[in-house]
Image (cartoon, rainbow, N blue to C red):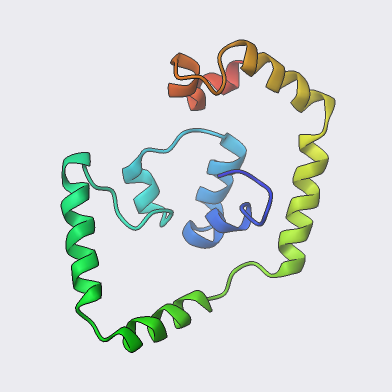
Length: 132
């Protein structure tokens, strides 16, 4: 989870303040099972079962009356999210921190070590970030 655009509010709202603090301030990687427990993903599935699960779910949803699906989607899309003021405040805080000299220096170090290229840093970023 990264700050900005209201994302700081999401982990805390989904899993509670403790896991939200752990995820955002700790900046560690979370596996699919942990993300599922914290409510950040619907479920964790093995790769081998993903296509069959999605196909079955799509067929099931398609079997329901279209009006009922649209109505249900509308209700779900109206569930509370952080308000506009909270999202704007979060974005301002993120922009302030992201534009700092400290963040620029850390980003330069990460790019020099292979950030955004497939390799050890990308595959183990959660564990390696604390050594910067």
